Length: 272
Ligand SMILES: NC(=O)c1ccc[n+]([C@@H]2O[C@H](COP(=O)([O-])OP(=O)(O)OC[C@H]3O[C@@H](n4cnc5c(N)ncnc54)[C@H](O)[C@@H]3O)[C@@H](O)[C@H]2O)c1
Image 1: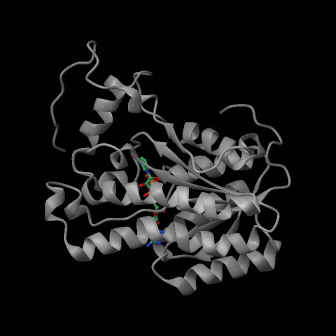
Image 2 (image 1 turned 120 degrees about the vertical axis):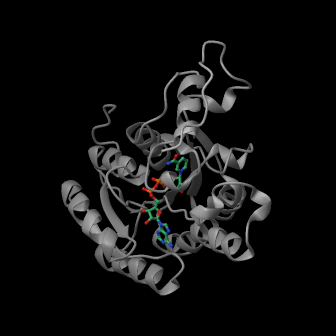
């Protein structure tokens, strides 16, 4: 981890999307805590509470409660808890996405209306829903960060409706950045390279996608949650005070590549 002592001293914020210690949100939480931030975490349902509570303890973080972004009341309760505890917040991390894994394989054209709408609600609208609440607590400016993926820009195998959702999420970042800029609230996204997490395990042939990235990214490896965490620290701290509406790739450079590297081996899909 990079040396960041004190960069976030005096700053407080909410991190949504920690499921376990492999979550990207956990990498971000660790980087922020190391830099001196005070954190609040949410969890989605009792099953995840058991995992999130000990992780929160490790960082001395406040557990702001259950939050399912499809349930507006649960979002309101979390922000009420934050208002009571701190009065204001300085940053918000939105690392939340979901789609039916049966539709993260095969053809996009077969997406159902039900899963399309659910994917959009959880993975796209939720950023706007939490931003509405955060705006009221960011009375001294702030920084909001979400997580996206290259499948928003280019067609990736099996990413399907999630690619469409991430494209909408990236457009939301820009519209929110414009709306909140006059209040000195910045809104950015990190487009992370593939990382083996709970959510990623739902994507068809994920190991193949991961390997392909490792062989073909300029850095010839895949990115880690700690590296995403350090880039998030930049976007959530005053170091990036002149940056908003930005989609920052943190993917070992994969997004600049046009075709297979000449030194990359030919690989094929390996089924578990
Ligand atoms: N892992 C990757 O390869 C990768 C790459 C780029 C972007 N991302 C994005 O990073 C973000 C975090 O995912 P991750 O890979 O760390 O996986 P993860 O499974 O650790 O985290 C996903 C989180 O979304 C939460 N979530 C899902 N539905 C929810 C709901 N209805 N209400 C509240 N929370 C809900 C889960 O509780 C979980 O904490 C997602 O937006 C994902 O699309 C992941």
